[in-house]
Image (cartoon, rainbow, N blue to C red; front, side, top):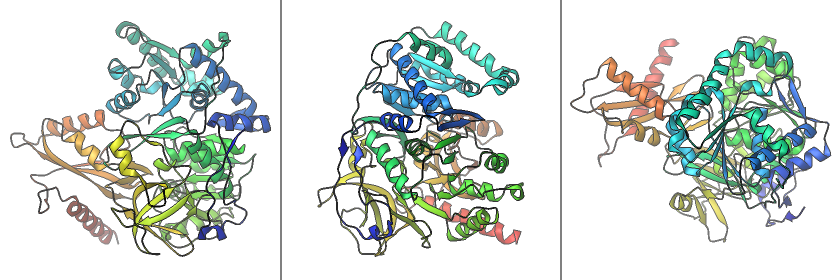
Length: 590
């Protein structure tokens, strides 16, 4: 396979690479090419595990091919968009790589998105096919007529189970079975020219397809659409290429010592999240590791899950580490199998860093927590602290071929060492751009005087003389809750459209478990009186238009909101009020 060669320059962080190569020659092919190559090398290794159902790389590659044939059989062509609205299941990953094989683009949608958000994501991409989990059927029914979708594929959590477990699932989930039947009935009556089919019947369509199903795609071709807030905070489709994902996989492989085939990872981070899809799935499948799929996170079962599955890698956000630390059955923990621990997605302060390391050591792991950094616009991860080389407050050093620099805010001028500025990234993992958002793309991707295209992250930080990076704060208004980005301006735009609302603002407030949660401050129109019914109606409206993970957990109604000198809502005043309130609560608890 043709290899891509990138620029070769020298940077201070290289002296900490050890055996990590400074530069990598990347394949000029697709994501599925990389996985198929792994399957050829290690056919009998396990690729995926889902509730004790394990499939080898040979089985996985065979099922990807069958799914690709089925996609061609229903008319999916090169360049089409297929939406995947699924948790971490085997079927979802088979579909993801099959879409790549036929030359189409995967549009990854959070299953907990509101129905209006799902509608927006489908229409932004003009998706004609959607694979969705059965529990989402009501949302799909309510919006499908407003989209371009002509084929709906319904998957069940039981599709990937075998034997007794599948039998028990069908027995104890009769409501799901009824839901699938109801979906078909409703669609047949209400939606002409739309086909609704179960995942299993969809796969059978490929059995009689004998024409070409695999399309040659290059590294630079579009492959995946993920979502983020961009510079304005409203949802933006991020166009990521085959190279973006393959560069991440190659870089992360070497940065983790390197990790090796036969290792396993607990894939808790969701596949509609760049961290989950890029780091916990594609990187691991490129290496030849086993991904232990966890479709829904339940803190109470985490200790037993680790003890039972014995993963070698534990990768997650600080909320996940906190859930582990606070688990009521932590004393039963056995972390002796874990030899690599990575925290990303949010700030990990020094106090928690020490606590988590003590916990892992106490229960058998010799690994130390390694802190990483990235964002969806750079395929989730481009920076990681070296093994046993932690620096207080640092987010690590760049992956091979990724360059970081700090610039004066609002400019492209580089600042001095240890001086705060905007973090910028240049490298093979940087996105192609925002889907149909030229202005937003130009705000984020800028050509500097060195002739390179740099991603302006909207994050503030600094760099020391050795090239270690330090994250300080964000330029954008953003709330990080359980590792997910919540954009206040977007939530406010939704709330303000309600007929009862005059104005609103949303801020992040501290939460012991999630880190932060969203709190909405709402001012009603003069003629509207606050009643239980009005409050209920506004909350129901929000739940219909805002994803569950972004939904404000607290609503507070006020007669007015604080304003700046130029008349804008002073959300920082509200943030300080909440900080003060939290301190008062803490002092009373003490």
